[in-house]
Image: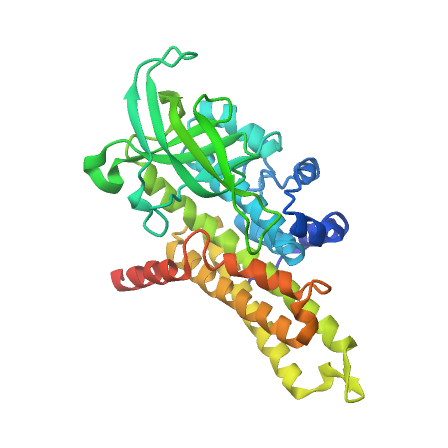
Length: 387
């Protein structure tokens, strides 16, 4: 299969690179140091169609596929992992859950504003006791009568979600809750929440190692009334929906990993050509050349795995194994490449004066979010053994 980008895809790649260099790079360290979530980028992202990359124009989106999506996330991650992560979470988690499983009414009400960039989306699966074991969800949704502002029956939701991207900035949140404790993961349902709902609030913002300009916080539900019309799909389908959403989400994290690795590699090459030792640039030493060769090879492998998964997704093929492989390899490669970038920079790589340390900090999250490396290995092994 040929994974060379076509002319249109290359044009998209170049336009996003130009945007990232001009609008994002000048502010990267400032945003990172202050943990500033650049909400001011939203109109610019929306103008480029980056708030609704995967969705048809009829829903306010750009109507692009996963290959284009992966290319966009890579280019954003190459300059700033935080911005790439935010765009990925908005598109492939919250918005995509509504697009894939929502009713027409739900798409009209929630997806269109999300895709147009008029609102931010968040997605709630993880809890303090339900991380890798997503089926261990403890947030509950109990059937109840009419809400104060609704004329239909609904659900009273109680619980919390942790490590949620856009938990504070979001207008719309898709989250899962237990609706039937006796059915295990078949008793979990998905719901659409919005910030106007009484009993739904944001909580503690995390002080993170990396991805510091991407907002991460908790959300809390305290007798939050959700009308039944906000339930996504049938009752009890929430866990299975979430697993399918993660298949696509892992492609975006793989692409983000490739972008971070590419940025770290380019920084290392630049420094190696400039840094003089023993009367010549360190790029002329075989020890450095071997490092750069290994870094470039790992990035290319990660990129090919990611594009393979993206192409399969565009073709409507099952991608559980391919996306897990791409996410596993690309995220771990990003950590290795970023660490080597720090090493090539030497003492300067351990300072804030050069970008290597930030790529290193940002890369690590990619091995944890949307399923740890250990979970990816479990997913891959189960699919292999299932034949």
